Image 1 (cartoon, rainbow, N blue to C red):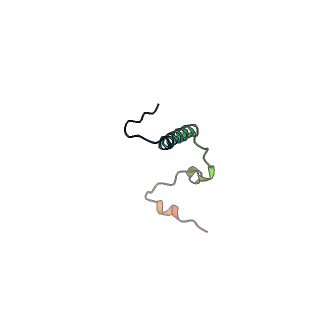
Image 2: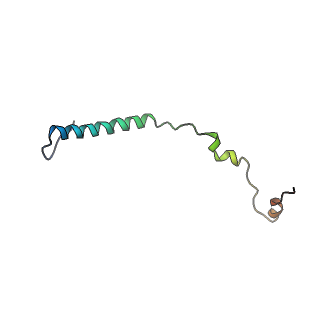
Image 3: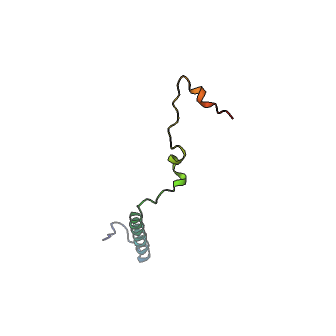
Length: 69
């Protein structure tokens, strides 16, 4: 129930305010229904790029940076 506390709105103004309240209510209800996250695409998964841990820096880490070709 909605009650006008101040002023004297015209029927058109009251209808416009009620339309906004109703639209907001419908938008919130539809957002709650669609709150299930979409399945993520494997192409954008960062774990796909770095499946193995990178070597940690250490005394001989410079030797692991050279790839003979």
